[in-house]
Length: 361
Image (cartoon, rainbow, N blue to C red; front, side):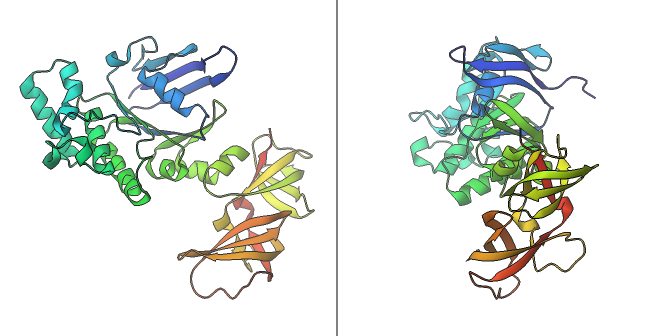
């Protein structure tokens, strides 16, 4: 059993002007064989972290370790790291096979060994029949597969992916998400993946690190991020969320009572530094809210007025006015006709354990 992390960021910071920091105080351990996604809005620092790990950027301070060896001052080509970019970065004048062979030729491998590795890598991504084509003769998904084969062909310790599916249409993007995840499971390689698409992060990752303003807000498995966000930013960024402003009335262990901005009393689970009198943001997922609840477990029952209904096939999306919000969202599974119209009065409810009171820092 390994006693040290496969990758370690130790107090890493990055500034381009000496005053404003793109990455601040980053302490991050990554396990061998892990699929870790760095997720966040544009400018949050996630791509800069990836570029420092790849060797294309140098930290302003702190250190980066790979298998216990410090690499932040090591040239990129000496790190044995494969990189896949959003624009694929394939050489247009080279065939598919020559593009994949390029990293091996730079490492001066024997020609026979190079040919066999290229064959294996292209077969792995199901592109062997296309090895003599040029990139311009391939679809976006095929070019992405070639870029992936090129990143894997020299058997790197680690593969970094920077928004590799960003240029693909929705259907192909979802297909490639599954392909990359299957490849990771089969090869057991370590992958650090950057995206701003939270659905992509939840689908593919063992853990997700959510970035904002140069700092990790929370790092956890996808289910934990969604079910137990650490702060209001994570709650809003991961999936859909009904955020309700309020002030804590009382706290007893995990249980807390919150008065919403319109005076509604809500029973919730306290998360973080929450105490009586503190302002909080209540986090409640739309699918956790029930129309006309009768079961005792729905301790929060509130009168609401429907403002909009939109049919999505598998569910109907209701927008209602409740708890001081006019855009409170409820997802109702499509099990039959929903006899409601805009303007209708309804009762909505949710369980205490599905509502988290998050401290506002």
